Structure formats: C-alpha cells, structure tokens
Length: 398
Image 1 (cartoon, rainbow, N blue to C red):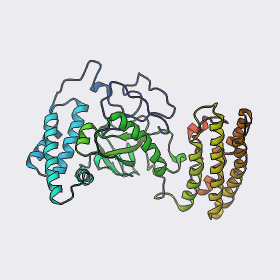
Image 2 (tube, rainbow, N blue to C red; image 1 turned 90 degrees about the vertical axis):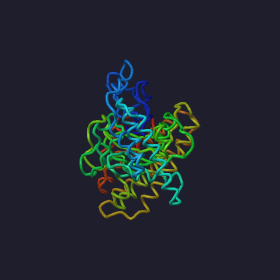
Image 3 (tube, rainbow, N blue to C red; image 1 turned 90 degrees about the horizontal axis):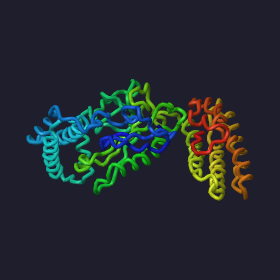
C-alpha cells in the first residue's frame, strides 16, 4: 500500500519517488516547488532513499523479514507471518535494507499455511482470506486501521510507509482514516491506475465522513495508502483514505468526523439539504464559452435550489433556528427564480447577467446566521473566500 488538499486533482509524482507512495495534490493545482526535499507535498518518500546517484547500498538485514521467515517456517500464526512479510517488503524498499528474499519466503510460506487453514474451515473465498490477514495485522500496521481510526506514525505522514499506531482521536494525531475502498480482483492494475481510483473514490467518500466542509481545517489534505504489487499478490484489495495536515509533519488536534455519528438530527437535516445544491454547483462546465452547457448547468442549479428550499421548509427546526433557517429558505427561493432566468438565456450577456446575480444570492456567507443557530461551523473555507464576488467553479460549499 501507499499514501499520497482537499478538493483538487493530484500532482504528477516525480521520477525519483518509489512505487506505492503518491500524495493527493493541493486544490490550487500548483506544481510542487522543486526545492522541497519531499517533492513539495505530503506523502512523497524521502529523496535520499533513491538519491541522485542511484540507490544506497544495503546496510542491514531487515528484522521484520527475519521474523516473517521464522513464522513462515514454523507455520505458527500464519496471518501474522504474512503481514510481517508484506510490511518487511515495504520497509526494505523504503530503507534500502537487505532481506527481501526472507520477506518473500516468509510471506509465501505463511500464505500457504493460512490458505490451508482457511480451506480446512471451508471459507476459501479470497475476501475472507484477506480479512484473516488484516485481522492478524500488528497494531502498528496500517492494515489494522478502520474507518474513524486516528493514528500516529514515526515519520508523520511525510514519507509514511506502513507504521501506524492507533490513538484516541481526541489526542493529537498524524492521520484520521475516513474511508476504506474495496477493489475488485484480477491482475494488479498498476500504480497509476490505483492512484486515479484513489483520487476519485476518496474525494467522493469525503463528504460522507465530513458532511460539513466548513468544519474541515484549511490546512488538512487527503492522503491515501495503496496496495503494492507484492501485497496485491497476497490478496490486498484495499485503499485507505486518510485526512492529515498538508505539510505531513504537523498533527491534527481533534477528531475531524462530522456525520450522523457526531451531529444532531437538525444539523444533519441542514447539511443534507445543502448537499443538494453543492452537488449541482460541482457540475459547472469547464469551458467558459459553452453557452448550452452553462444554461443546462443553471437549470440544474435552479432545480437543486427548489429542492433545498423544500427540504429546509419541511423540517421542524428548534425554536432558535426556525427564523434564521426560514429566512435562508426565502432567499434560496428568490435565487431559484434568478437561476431559472439564466437557464432560459439565449445569449451570453443575458446568461452572465443572471448567473452573476444568482451567485451573489447563494453566497455561502448568506447561510452563516442559520448555521450559527444550529451550532455548525460559521467560517467559510478559505478557498471559497478567494473567489471574489463571482466564483467560476462549482466548489461553493454552502
């Protein structure tokens, strides 16, 4: 596996980066400055591992590989032996140590022992096999992490490979797992393909874990941990999606989860209504001169505004939030009419006249009073404030 700010396409990884570790790029889309020793973004492996003059000579035998081989030969705790073998392979690749043969042998012997054990229990499915591997993982392995787990790593998330010690989310921590993505079987799809899948799936799943993006610190990025070619051969079919500080070294000071498990019913109702409009805004056309595409988008925004207004008016709000939410719903209803006019425009001047008015009416700041009454975050994300009066993208989270 491997890892690679929020809300944006990933940066291309540099040729010096070892396979299996790629960071998700910052939302600004800026190329990582070359002077940073780790590629300018979190998640890159240390430059010194592969150096400008080729790999460093091995200096020691990896101790985890030795343990994996011993457990494999003894066929004792095969799940643990297999996990140790996979961890050793990643450590050897990252640290330049010796012992790859022992790690492979230990993993193979342990996998055979675990497969025989699984077969005897008549649970021979590949998914069950890998679940047994994960259940036997060490507490210090990323394989042991589940959604909602917070953890620390000896290197932080900068150069993070596999060490991960679970800690309470109320304490300072390096990362917080917000989703696990199951992958289909078949041949190893390659690191580029897995990175693309992680970009799509992790960002898609983020809204389910952090329903209120306003509550997500601007300094927090998305990381992911991918299967390697070696772990894939032993049944690893999972991507671990993680939230962590952008610099890869600072620590998060509290839990980031904002969903049904941490919010009350009124907060959830508000955020579910807001998500309808956010989804429509995200569909903005990429080409500015595509009038048919923009009018179709405006129609989608108008439809979403109508649905958001209906949802807000249908819910029974607490007394303190009734008027602020009602006023917000009235404003959204007016915005719907303006976006409908933009959708009916037959020329660009008319379209932009109404769409600019519509964007002003749905400015995220218009919802601050209602959010405050509901106990939600009241500071719009920084990337929204930087757009000015007329955002050109669909990233307006309300």
